Every structure is written in C-alpha cells, then in structure tokens.
Length: 405
Ligand SMILES: Cc1ncc(COP(=O)(O)O)c(C=O)c1O
Image 1 (cartoon, protein in one colour):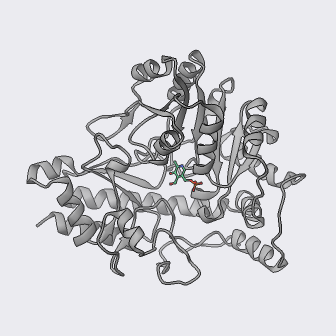
Image 2 (tube, rainbow, N blue to C red):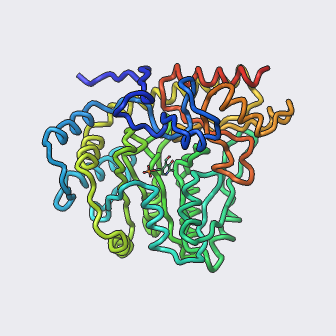
Image 3 (cartoon, rainbow, N blue to C red):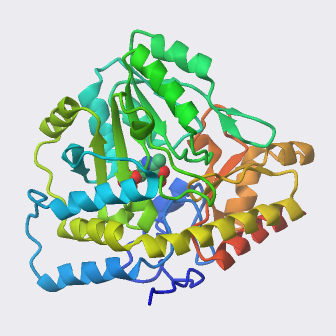
C-alpha cells in the first residue's frame, strides 16, 4: 500500500545537529542576510524556497543504500542509462515533454550552472534579459560576470496577476549587445506558469534577434491543481534553449545539488561541457535523482495537495484580516508574493517600519521585495509556504497582529 505522508509534522531543523539547515540557521550572518538584529528561537523562517517536509520514503531508502555501501569515491554517470531514463520518463509522463537523453548534462546546482552558462555563452559587456521581480541570482549571475542586465519589468494588474511586456522585450532583444534571456518558469516570486502562447511569443522574438534562451524551470513540478506546466523547449522545439531542471525544489533535495540541464543544441552541450571540465556528481545525488523520478511521484502528489491547501488558507486569512494587502494565488511554485503597499500607504507605514514590525516584532523572516525588484519592490514581501500549515498560519497571524494595531 502507498505511504500516507504527514506534512503537518513540525520538524525541528534549527537545533538538530546534523541538519545544517541554511534556512533555520541562527548565525549573525543569517541575521544580517534577513535584516534583523538577532535570530531567536521564536523566529519563524519563511524566507528560503526550501521545504520543511521530510523526504519521500523511497528517496530516503535509496540514500541509506548508498550510505551502507560505505565508500564514497568519485562517481560517474557514464553508462548510467537508468539515471537519464528516469529523467526522460518523468517529464514525458507528467508534462508531455520529450527529452533527448543525450542532451542531458548534470550540474552541481542551478545557480552555479547559470553563472557558467553566462560565462560560456555571452561576452563581457553583453546584455542579458531578465524580468523583474525575479529570483536575485538571475541578476548576480549577469553582473558578477561583467555583463549587463537588460530588465523587462513584468506588468501587474490590480489583482497582482503578472504578464509580459512583449513590446519592451522585443526592444531589448533587438539591441546589438543582447545575446541571452533568462526565463523563470514558473516565475519566482510572482507565481506565473507561462502559457504556451506566451512562451511561443518569447521564443519567436529570441529567434528573430538570435538571443539564446536559458529556461530555469526548476519549480516546474510545483504547479497548482488545474495548471499544466509547459516547457519552453517543448512549446518551441526549434528554439535554442538551455533548460534547467532539478529534483531540488520538487522533492526537497536542494542540499544534494542535483540539477540537470537539457540542451536543445548538441553544439551548445559540447561547448558547456568543455567549459566546465570534469564534474563528478556525488553518489547521493545520483541515487536521489533516480529514486525521486522513479518512485517519488506519490509523495509529490500528496505534497501538491497540501501546498494547495496551505496557499488557500493563507489567502483566506489575509482576505479576512488584512483585505488591503494584495496577494495573488500563485499558479506555480510554493512562494507567495505580497504587496503591502496599499495598506501601508493608507496607515502611514514606511517600508522600514513594515520590515521592523514583521521581522523584529512578529519575528517572522520573509524576504524583502527589493531583493527581487530593486526599483519597485519596497512594499513587497515574499513568503515561502512549504512548511507545516500550523507554522505558516501562525506566522501569518503574527503579521496580522503587528499590522492591526
Ligand atoms: C528560480 C530558481 N532558480 C534557482 C534556484 C536555486 O537553485 P539551486 O539550489 O539548484 O542553485 C532557486 C532557489 O530558490 C530558484 O527559485
């Protein structure tokens, strides 16, 4: 009989000595990152896109087998057809995206892959299109490598539903220096799952102006019921795309650094592998990828139901207690993007005061919107909700209390 998982369980990751959790770390450096004086035991951490759920049992069992082997030398994917087949079958079955197994390349994490891709496929001084508000390493992968961000700001309607400004996108793509576009799908933090029409339009513009598409789709398995994940490389098979996929977000395995890139072009694959040199995945990453994609679906289905329930509960709580705070139900991801602007302006609350009340008084660690949108994000906050629902709702009620005085 299939396992029934208990996502309500509150697991202490802050004090468990073998957890090493970045999210629940209370060091001065983490406090500084969150913009608080000190992280205490009372602080609830909802700032990192990292689940607090225990992993799927088949993945834990596979990792145990690797531990029990007792030797953790260099490992290889050469000739490991099972690994590549597990990835191919996962995306074919769930999303209808057919991957050529020969175009899949392991990378030790998505952010490091993004940096390497920028270094390999653009030149210093080139421009790379990103669409704010967006996951901050999209900017740093560009600017840390001496390239320039060409920002195509997403457009929000009154319900905080975001769409793409295609006219401006084309203007940026047409500039001589623009050689790459980093797509986020589903889009962290605004939660959009881009439609096939939107993806095709982006692909057409990029093809017209010879812009390489890098599609970060690592939240792609985390879509709400009724949504379907369309991959850029599936919608536009003729496009030049490097897709980032990962077990990271889907199965709560970020610590194993197992990203798999899918190249639409064999030349690009070869250029990339030559640029990174030898990369040896850990045996734990290999075991986890195979177990997750072969046997993790049952856990994921239960997890998706739980996330939907939590997101609905958060929406209801804010609608009931702070209706002026805008939040859009995300179509994908487990992050929620809040606009406290209308509420705060009405009551004369500055962005600094908002931060002080939530982070220091309510002791809830979110992520300030300016990280994702330096120009317009000052009244926005991102909340990650893949924790026990009781913990998430407690955090929300604390926020309500400090804003209702
Ligand atoms: C869109 C996106 N890309 C990449 C990452 C980080 O991935 P990795 O841990 O594989 O570097 C995150 C983490 O939140 C993310 O949201």
